[in-house]
Amino acid sequence: MAKKPNTLPEAILAQLGSFWLAIACLVNLFLLTWLGTLEQVEKGIHQVQVEYFESWVVAAKAGPLKLLLPGGYITMGLLTLNLLIGGLVRIRKSKATIGVIIAHVGIAVMMLGGLLEHAVADYGRIILHEGEEGDEFQEYAGWEVAIWDADATAGIQEYIIPEEQFADLAGPDTRTFRRADLPFDLVLGNFLENCEPRRAAGIVPTAPVYEDLFLSEKPRDKEEERNIAGLYATAITEQGTSVQKSFLFGVEQFPWVVEAGGKNWAVELRHTVHPMPFRLRLVKFTKEDHPGMAMARAYSSDVVRIDPDGSEHPVRIEMNKPLREKGLVIYQASYGPQNGMPGEPYSVLAVSRNPSDRVPWIAVTIIAIGLVWTFLARLIGFVGKEKRRSAKAKKTVATEGASPKAAA
Image 1: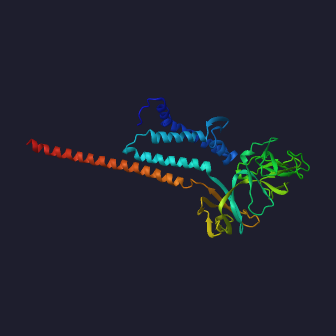
Image 2: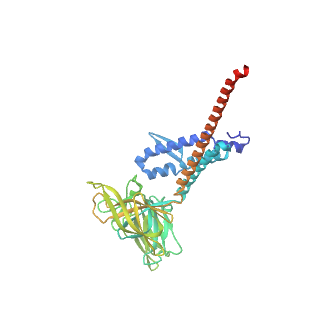
Image 3: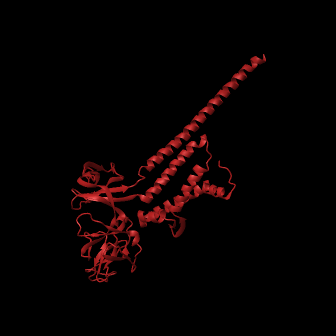
């Protein structure tokens, strides 16, 4: 048991490391998980994750009521402090608590690994048809605007505008982006989280029309990867003498081309792209169906990993056998076309770049060591105590048995 605090800092530490704070954090975490799971039916897992767990405060929906609760950041932050202070700093250090301390270290490692994953991990996918190659993967959700020299054939440099710099541009709001090495300014506005191009003929358009098309807003889909973003763009030359306008749609087959500075510049809205340290070429995609059914039992991709030095390494990626190489983990996630749709087969490979990928295994191992240590220590102590009790009982019986002789 920790000593009683005598100063204000010690009292604050005592409260942060208290058992009751841990209970409060766990109860709030339970509420966030429960209410978030219920709301997931309407909003989808991605939106709920952002609102409930990637936030400081959340207005949680509990039936007809709204509960203002600490979000995931506050809850997990306090729980981590409680764990470190109560389980490692203020706990009494002795042979009896060694196992408990080791287990708390393992829990701390797991929580720090989760923080690292949240801060730096990237998740996405790469889609390949047989014979195709790719050296980058796209996120499932986030968007970016990419600009590059459309006339270049090698050494292409891309200029990226991340989603957080234009996601707030709803309605008439616009923002101008300029770079010294680009011969035009790009004005972005009217960002739509989910939309589709529609023809303006016969209807009243809700947005500017270009080439008889405009972007029509759609309700946000609860499955985040089904939302296709769009926004409007205006390119203005440095002298302001030329203005080119269009809209950018997230799944356009070809980018918008801007003529400026004697060159053609490609402008594209796409899912956030991350480069890979090697190329992948899909050689063959294989799908095995259940007998008598069109439902996949197993599917795999035979790929070739091409390193920067040109060396090639054949690899098979299966549903439960990912490719782990140079900080990436590549899983067999899906395939297409599905449901008997026509088209050439393609493979969908999920890609994750997570430096803390192995941290859970390390943390669980440390926790297991702590628990086993505690169990064995208690077991050895119990066995020793029973032996001493048995020996004392035998000695007492022997003494009582010898007493009549001694009295005689």
